[in-house]
Length: 246
Ligand SMILES: C[S@@+](CC[C@H](N)C(=O)[O-])C[C@H]1O[C@@H](n2cnc3c(N)ncnc32)[C@H](O)[C@@H]1O
Image (tube, rainbow, N blue to C red; front, side, top):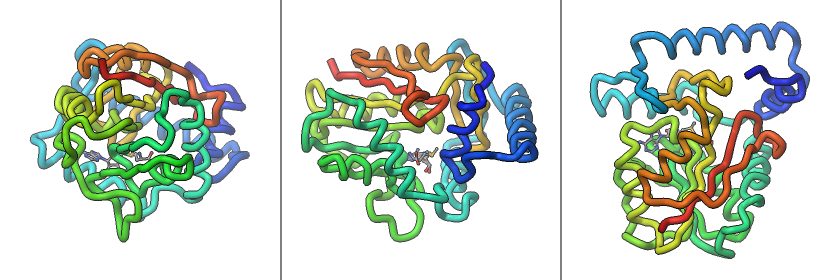
């Protein structure tokens, strides 16, 4: 899949430069090529829908993940308020959210997604292996072992399943903390067959977002209620799956 010029503009506007120069586009294309080559190397294993980065052990995985924010200099977004607005746009699409309900955000880093849920009237908190310095909305935690009670949360939100170590464990934890008929909202990047190139800290990837959505729904005992492409909502190469615990 090739991005349209509008798609490229939208993609770059997520960061800082809405009209990238030819030089920046070339540098970006070179980075994508390098990432595709890395994905085809022995550092990754491929099995059907799912591909996984090879780590020696769990400690190596967590150390690599903790490194991500540090490698970005402690802040992920040049304009954090803009990121919050983009998250709000995504979340405003979700009709099924319980008004003023509780939302747990997994892998929330500095908490822009948590802030967006709070601005929309929810009781929200995030967890992350590395929430950085003086986090306001996120506590330290591992999404493979949640420090929250059974059947206690209206909605779990996650946009980083591409940082998973053990999909079964994560989905069983999500199912455990969700209330009966609670929602799991997963924002899922396009698969590699759809043109997405995996990043340096990604641990898992998939052929197509929709196929991955069906897989996580079946692993988590969830029913897919909505699956939408977020490209026209300011987030090119992203999809959103709204799933309900059944
Ligand atoms: C791509 S970032 C996404 C951050 C945030 N959701 C956002 O959109 O800005 C992935 C995040 O997942 C975190 N992470 C990776 N593995 C984790 C784990 N096992 N438990 C909790 N957080 C994890 C990383 O530290 C990183 O902040």
